[in-house]
Amino acid sequence: MKRAVALLSGGLDSATTLALARQSGFEVYTLSVDYGQRHRHELTCAARIADQLGSARHIVVEVDLRRIGGSALTDEIDVPKDRPLEQMQQEIPITYVPARNTVFLSLALGYAEVVEAFDLFIGANAIDYSGYPDCRPAFLQAFEQLANLATKAAIEGKGRFRVHAPVLSMTKAQIIQTGSALGVDFSLTSSCYEPTADGLACGRCDSCLLRRQGFIEAGIPDPTRYAPTSR
Amino acid sequence: MKRAVALLSGGLDSATTLALARQSGFEVYTLSVDYGQRHRHELTCAARIADQLGSARHIVVEVDLRRIGGSALTDEIDVPKDRPLEQMQQEIPITYVPARNTVFLSLALGYAEVVEAFDLFIGANAIDYSGYPDCRPAFLQAFEQLANLATKAAIEGKGRFRVHAPVLSMTKAQIIQTGSALGVDFSLTSSCYEPTADGLACGRCDSCLLRRQGFIEAGIPDPTRYAPTSR
Image 1: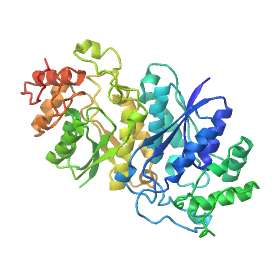
Image 2: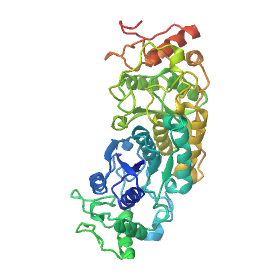
Image 3: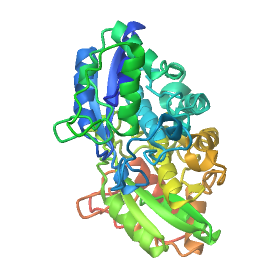
Image 4: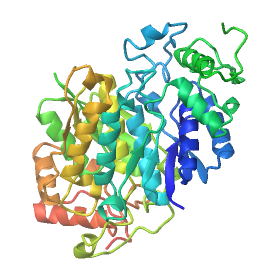
């Protein structure tokens, strides 16, 4: 069985991406990154999703991006709340983490080399946040090129790395419908940037708003447990 | 003054690279990576070199590459000893760490974005180990391309990232001569893959052998403190 490595954040997009990788017949090694994110609850979710969807081995790599800073997800900066969709799409939000997907894909590449996989799956999505630079096709293509120059496995001719982003051009509703059809249990996932200590979603950050709207548009009941203070 | 970010390992190559960046007039922010390397002594050396050469700010980012494994530098695999130079150059050694420079440059890129630098310096060297894939010019060029697609700073047109590897084509002797001329105190550096707890060099791993030979060829006294068991 061909092996792949999938990045798993604990959210909707990467869960559906993993399900798609499994459906394509890959034995999938999953990787989550503990980067000092304030919403650490997503790491618990990632492990549960890995289990539900039959990951061959799930690892968590620690990278302390707080040392670098520059984001509302790692620093003590307020996460924006209650923003209309149009505003979210106007600019790259403060929740952007400098070079995050570059760091994550680099770790996935190292993991892939060790488990002898050449297919990397990432749940990047270019629709909801048109602004995140490292969620665009040109970035993913450039990383694929880099991967084939960066590694012992590639230059020894053992294979050619490919970066797969199967939900890249899907709307949130399409991602939810696709994942549901493949049996993803979305109640195990978390998208909130600022969940409570018990893992309840705030319902008001950009990520919660996009998720909630996605379930409505998909016509699928939203299994998210929201905090009493959500709207 | 223009800002730059330099990766600092604690060894000769990155110390000379930092000195060259300073000589070029950059205010340099330095970054070392605590990746679970067995030779952690190099992190102490990196901090001392940063201080000696006037780093604007030195940070250490933790990335636990032991979770990924696959290298003699992070796993309990014997580091090769007493190998002739020709043998070192025949194949990519077991001290290769999967995707290491890709991970390191990604972190440098994130740091650069936060401190508003566009110039990244890395002490990659293509001469001694012709085998390390991520020390080749083609790899560094591919990373530069990636950096200009990966970041908010680049796509907003604030600047263009450049990857500088000024010692890439120098021999070890040339690196030592260049660093010496710029005032690098090489007694603060460490190259050994398996130093003693006190930081004494083994004198027998590939890295020690290349370093020792480099000082001889450079005609400069070797300030390295070797363990009594070295040859």
